[in-house]
Length: 282
Image (cartoon, rainbow, N blue to C red; front, top):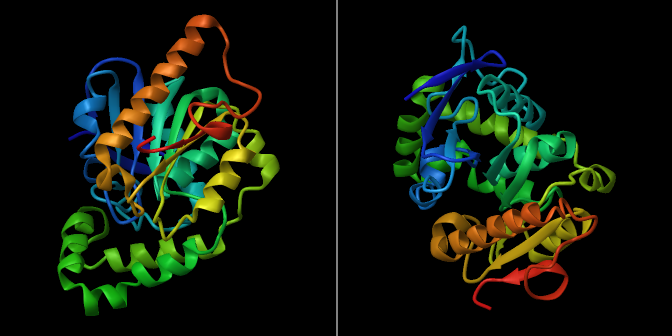
């Protein structure tokens, strides 16, 4: 699988399909192929997919083979995304992000909305709690070693190529520190994300309460909100058929708007339900 030199990294990625470019970003501790495993076989029928592994994850490492965690932050991940799409020659592109990848994409959308055709943002809120508190418990490497040795083994196998044996523990600690300390996006910054956005959240997501998802939806100038029933955090896995159908509907709406010359709306665009809120199963 290929890598590309960007922002001091050898960024590992997988490319699949034909059509307009779609960049897929994964969540913390995972990889792009794993987080989007229920989507990419379908999405590649319509798009050229770029499934990108974040720094320190899977096989993405620094070019000089020093630790890819130096200067770790949300903003560094945003810079990595910008460097990757520039290196691949993607002037404008669709993108989808889950959890950590969703925060990367949301922040990128506030800074470079002109580069995005559309964005699917799943499982994230710009508010610190309860996200930081839940992450501090679930992603504590000492707890994982003690209580979930099988997962510890998976993490070691997944991230050893980038981090070396046992390096996943340092990776998780850096992620947790950033979640606890990162500068939060302001309402003014969110209003700058003038991009068609589909927000997706599980109705039982312990990281993102529904009221936070609604607040984010209302602050974005052109968003729809998908509430996935009977789902926790990983909506791409727990309800893949419903998620895939909603995303396909969203992309068709973008195509229709482009065909009629409407462009990006000035306010929240209603897909179904009240104020642009789509509840899965309606």
